[in-house]
Image (tube, rainbow, N blue to C red; front, side):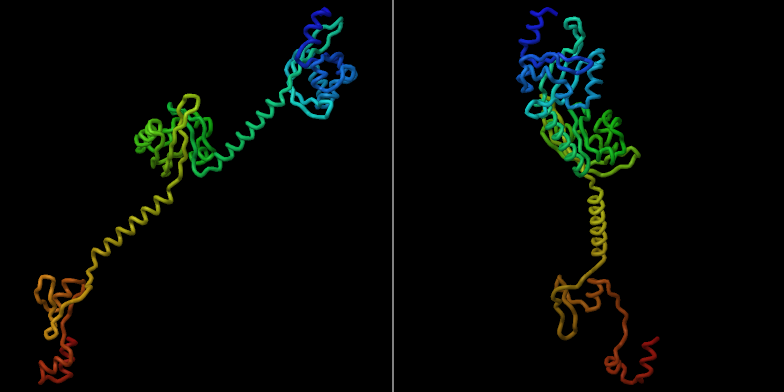
Length: 324
């Protein structure tokens, strides 16, 4: 490499560049951009080894230098320490060149700390959203207008028994009970046309079990593509309670239909004790009660009436006749 080319490509470049001895790790040369970046004078850098900057162990640094020398790899991610002690994320492109009569490593260093920070924040947010999704009650799902599932929570796998590889190949209607597929299809169409919809349907598991669920759906748009996001809640307990309530009401209505009650004021004759009905007719008391209740009558004669009606009969004879 001529001095003019070397000066043009190396010394005057705005990129951070180092020339490194592949066997010892000593820094043979550093351009101005490298001095400005690391915070050292040129003579200080030339008196250092790359191990003084790279945060890897000495053995790891030499292993990576050999990869660069043999061209097994030419791209690396490292942590480099600056003169003030600050640690920076860097990506390094390094490969062998002939400088003079010696093979050396020509390394170009880019600071990627800002990118790494953004990636870390994205990873934190991704982990947070995953944790949030997986703590949602019931099942959660996201799919596009073609029915391709894009995201779901762990509960969908647990409840249905399908593996992630199976789920990503399935259509949302594949999870629905056969009798409910048409209603669910219409609810999905409503979401994409009107923005939201709810539907109750049976969720079919891999074992064939049908579980009653309430499914919700909301439309959202990303990069001009329509998606449906929603959750499904197990309503088995609610259905059970509703059925028990319905059965109880039916039993009560059946019982009430068999019950006749006498209530309110009954107009009764003070003399003969007949009762006047709603139509204005007077009825014997036993006839009225029998018609308006479930009571049945058996007839006998009380002692006082027996004396009036049968004064000649002995009391003991009367008791015997009544017992018969």
